Length: 288
View (cartoon, rainbow, N blue to C red):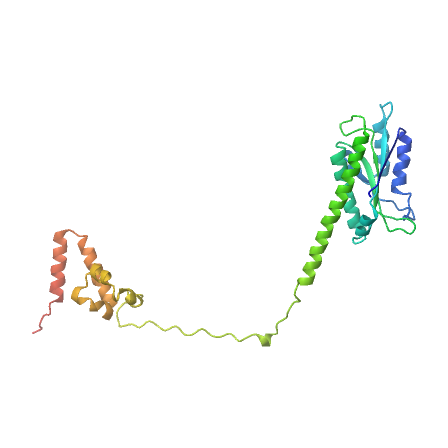
């Protein structure tokens, strides 16, 4: 089961020593190395990594209070969760723990502020157990003195366990999708130039047949299939006994239809004159 330890004291100087312990003194660090100090709340989040400024801010938050209360938390995981953390590298595990800490305090103790650090060392004959050391300021972000009841402490434990398990499941799904994508990705296939089929030239397009006249209706011959056998088209165009001309000479038929339709829109006198002139033009004359 997950374990959450909560202790408190009222000494600002002891809070500074706890900050140094969280950042430096524990197993796994040598040669003056230190862990990254992360902030809880906007004020301490802006002081990330500045150990001296963090100690000063904690002491200042205790001024003006008769009994400033500094809560220190140790949040751990159980053995099954620690084994699941072994599938990820250190950076991913630390990011997962950071998200769980921020969501836990935001949900269970809204308005709390302070600092925390992620530790990933284990113990003797034990796998590495990622855990978190957190130290809260004696004031909330609204400057109200901190008071955490036993009910609120129980809620912190429940939120911590829930957020860690959710983060593990989310990262495991991402890892599974990535592995599945790599497994089902087909290897790249390089085609040789010799295997490509040669390009086939397009067949030459037949040139339209001309009979010495300007072809005003080039697609008329393609439309003969629609006009053949369609009595309505022939009746509307009024081919009558000369309907054969539509098949023999479509351009002339179109010109005749256009002339007939245009003449109907003219006044009667003009139309009669045009038809008279047209009849004289078609009458053959004998040359002497």
